[in-house]
Length: 240
Ligand code: F6R
Image (cartoon, rainbow, N blue to C red):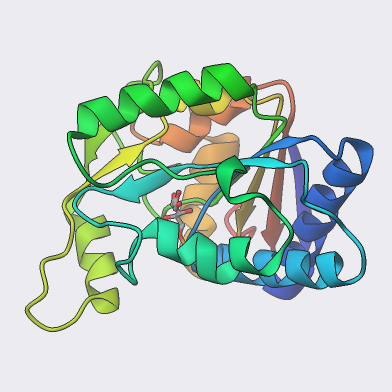
């Protein structure tokens, strides 16, 4: 694991933007694995700016990590909607090359179809990951099998509560998601984790210095040969 500590969240996001842009310059036909969440927003803003300055996504394939079960792409809180609004609609990527697991229909079937699509078009060259405060990656919550594949996963109570702020009063907050599994994620050729802010400090420590354990799913990344962890000073505060 290579840990890159930068002063601010903006510096960390800029560094990750540059890593992704570098990957696309090196191989314009790259397969990217992408994540959603607040941490990634400046990265996508940065990629859109790069695109306006000439970076092309025309031959890129994208697989997103996860989607809420029950939310279709038109739902403003769906991850499909998030990606369309924050990246896909602003760059020259082909719609047919953007994959997000389906939140509609039978989750097990959606998960199987997603694994098959990754097998057909993969492997993922660069997988971008955020980090949950509880150490989750994708929606692989603590206790997830380290050998898991894409599947429906029950969200932890804390994750559901953290998500509640994004939904209207009285609106049901999804309790499950279809997520790439931990083994699926680890098949990527290289992985970049971006985590910023004091709220992530203890999860960063568990990921980088803790034992490899299903209770901190991100700790499995210690076993992957090409992982960069990009964090700001606050997220690095608990490292030895
Ligand atoms: C979302 C995802 C999650 C987030 C994580 C951090 O696709 O995979 O693992 O990356 O929950 O979310 P933020 O960035 O909102 O703190």
